[in-house]
Amino acid sequence: MISPLELRRILTEWRTRLQRVKAILAPPVWDESEWSRFGHALIALLQQHGATWTAEGQTYWDLRWNLRDGGELICQAEASGAERLSLVVAQTGGWVQEASSYTWFWMEFGPNGDLLREPYWVEGTWREALMTLLVPYRHQAGYFLAGAAPTPPSLMLGHAASSDDPSKPSPS
Image 1 (cartoon, rainbow, N blue to C red):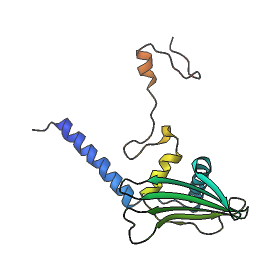
Image 2: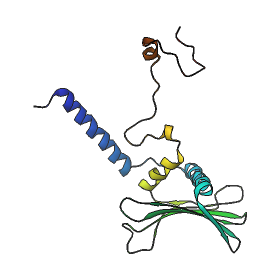
Image 3: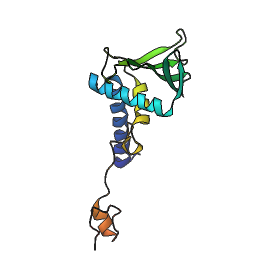
Image 4: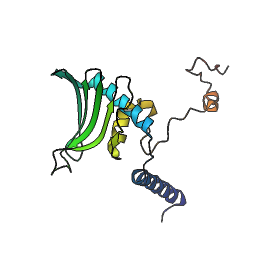
């Protein structure tokens, strides 16, 4: 026989999984400014960590990741002088067999960082995967965690410990 506490734990675990499925089926909708910020962050990631080369007056950045189900997720940017910067996230291999690649995301920026055309995107877990690379580790939550929580001061006071935070007074 299963205890009430264990039953509650199982139900809570399944509720968390169902919330994750709901988030996948109906993801939060980003507006154009959020996609623009995401695109700028991807470009910064590419320029910092990607392979770079120049050919025929164009500068290219390329960064790739292997996918668990096979294939690669490719993030590329192309700068055409100072006039235009294009960003593409695409997949090759894996479930993309009959086509050479599948485009998940495409943006073009002008010299001032403004959008030159309406961005193209397909919702999917690729965005979440790349967000984990863009968001500092302490802010990453995945689907199970809702974010960081502070240690209760009462716990530290109960053990006569001092805080590592110099802005908080020590419990003397």
